[in-house]
Image (cartoon, rainbow, N blue to C red):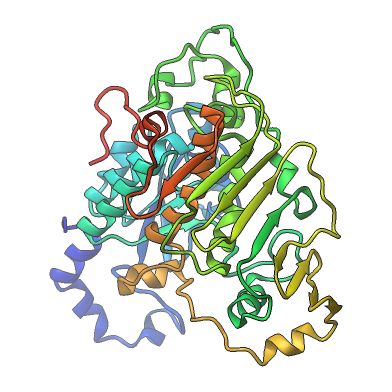
Amino acid sequence: MKTNRRNFLKTAGALALFSIVPRKVLGGQGYVAPSDQLTKGIIGVGGIGRSRYHFTSDENCRLVALCDCDSNHLKGAMDLARERFGEEMRGYHNYRDLISDPNIDIVHICTPPHWHGVMSIEAANAGKDVWCEKPMTRTIGEGKRVIEAMKRNNRIFRLNTWFRFKDTFYGLGTTVEPLKKLVDSGVLGWPLTVRISGATGFAWKFFWVGKENLAPQPVPETLDYDMWLGPAPFKPYNVHRTHSTFRGYWDYDGGGLGDMGQHYMDPVQYILGKDNTSPVKVEIDAPQQHPDAIGIWRKITYTYADGSRIILEGEGYESGNKVPYIEGPNGKVFQGFEVELNGQPAPDIMNIIAQMPDPEPQNTDFIKCVRNREKFALNEENGHRSCNIVNMGVCALRLNRDLEFDPESQKFVNDEAANRLIDQPMRGDYRLM
């Protein structure tokens, strides 16, 4: 591993010098010595990168650098850091300069998804740990390469969708843990069908669609459009192709499915115990998609080898609260966590669940995982598998046909066109290695 600031200080004896002085003398309870403090840099500060959840700096992990290829975004973030933390950040235009900064331990990737795989791999190769926004990658092949890079470089990876381990899951009135316990108990029977509908809130970003036949426009002086495109194919600039509306174009994301799909389907993958596999089939009900601009779809159905299914409902499938979210041969779970067992309401279900074994504990403190070199709860491996669900749907939509998938090889069965979408060519000198 490359020597960074923190490791140098330790090897130089600085840590030993501080260790002979009691912590309470240096800074009271919870004091973190400067040589122990982790540091992070954020790439992409136009939207989520400046959110209150991510634009943070404290004694455990100090924000020290920001990067954006839009000078307005970068200036706004630098000003915010000065106002909020009273510190001057290092500002970078090129993400590679931030990644190569020896003073940074963690790289937080808040860019459009067409950058996620490339930046994660380059950060790992530079000896950085990685915090990446969802979806983990834009293609199945990129996810496989990220796993290889994290293993090769012994890096810690966090994917930023957290519903498998905290917060009330969309529309259900409960966290995921009681659902996991209920499913693991077997009282619902098997196989299960999970229906993700408009009633759960899934449709709230459904209409992330693109515009066809965009007219070329002058590139703003504040934006390095070539850098913004990065590994994506060159297309003439239009304001709708970038920033807050980029999700409507296949080159950069997967519409509402790409934006919100992993938030919804990662917890389902966990609930069903499928973290090490993928569905074997994806079926779509959708109009023919434009080759550049993403359109709407009606329904996407994923089926696992054991018959379990995930059904995503889009336009025209507002099923309502009385269609079960989870359904098995022996029981149903509705929005609001209403449960029926063997055709009868189970009003005491929480008392029943309380008697069931708890799921295995999860490592949900990313900073602690980085310090202890332990895998985070949602890492490159299980994150890749839930991202596969998103990208399988994207491939089926783009080709406008149902597809069969081999979870072991992670390739589509007897479909050359679909497999070409797994590993897509990249522009310029960008590589997944």
